[in-house]
Image (tube, rainbow, N blue to C red; front, side, top):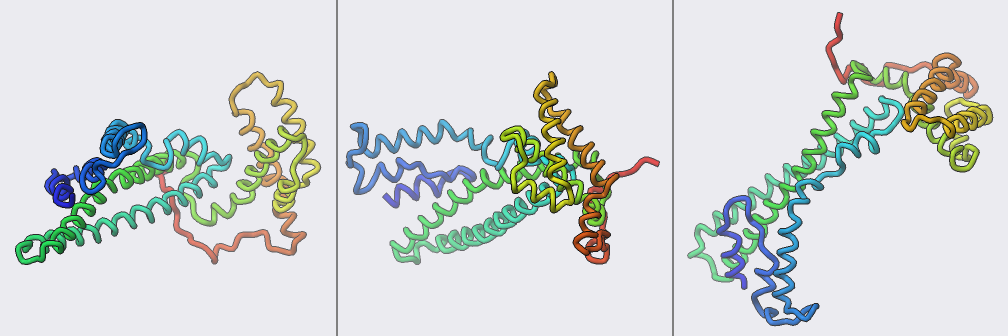
Length: 295
């Protein structure tokens, strides 16, 4: 069986190092073993190979984390563009770690592959079973390298999609530093809480205990907010607009009123005994998401 395996895989063209399951199960000591469906193990293994070949094209589509639709509508669905920027940062960092790992694994495996090839160049000097073992290692390594490309390309798709979304998002927020992010944090958190409050009121008619706490932490009166939420949900229910445009307008309006005009976050900081002003000495001043600004 090992000689057939080696012949099947080692001599294949570059990029086609995939050993069919039936090449292994169809040979050796278990070749005549009965399997399910009244067929032999070999026959079922051949059908499995056919099934994989039939569906391999799907891996070219679903070899990455999310579709572009899902990235934009689900994963980057914060009402604050600043929070969406933060999510892109986290996703890109995760993808970079994964691709860096894949990069160095590829380097290490290429070294292993070359070492095995060099050892097998002197096959005539090797003990027979030692040579067989090296050939099987080489075959397994080549198959792994070939199949790893699908996963790597999937991560690449995600990176390129996220980069495009990042460039699009710069139309809303750009040329900002950590100080700008700090100055927008209160509004970003309030927007998130407002959306969750609306969902609470839609479902049960009141804001849940956890969301009340979130509002209090930002500096908002939960009782008054519940009254406003109930009024909005009642108006939303009879609206003829099927889009979420009204939701975004309502959330933006409340956030601007409570943070920019009233300053509920600053009032809470005064009550707590904290300085409400951001200290720029503790963070980076480097601007990012750079775009050219017309004079």
